[in-house]
Length: 290
Image (tube, rainbow, N blue to C red):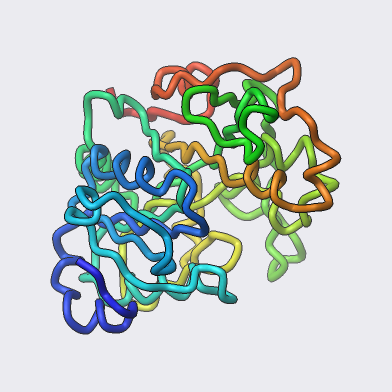
């Protein structure tokens, strides 16, 4: 179903948001839009909303299964405002996920369990948000794939990830409790081409709605507990959003396109498109979920 504006969708179909979890897919360009939609439908989201320009094509069989909303994804604060609008319209306690096209959610044991199973367990652990790491994917051959996107030749970095304590400016820059800034991947290796405020790879990609909650421009929330990587008493589940977005940007930006001829390095490895590889590399945490 096609909706002309986000406001029209909220006014006419807000009841659908109670039948979650809900996935919001923001399409910045036509690259891998269909595979992104298909992946998240298979993952088990009950509602998938595509926010995109009307010119971006979608396969008819997929368009019949989603709600498409006309949206200027490139406008200032377009993503945060849309997420906050949907969050405010959804019933308290509803789970929402958001990502961009050519991004794919993976979580522990996702081959045999759905995102609904994941969030049911996370809710039982009294968690209202889940930390997700954005793991950069890139094509192994940039000559064959100039935009660096290839699902059949996808690679990722197996090392080079690190975390720094997140400082609190309201407490004399003391570390925030259970909050870290995570770095790695293409944003780390090619940081000279990435602005300082876009280098983090952590994103609170899954969260429960509640009154007054706001997503901020740095992918953190106004409720600081939402920004923590685990509860105080034990480790919690985390997930990965495997993403071609950074690779696409580095190959489309004139300043970096001609400076980078290959994304591969000694720590590159083919992506096997399964959760076991991500857990073995230490890129996500199964917590107490066995």
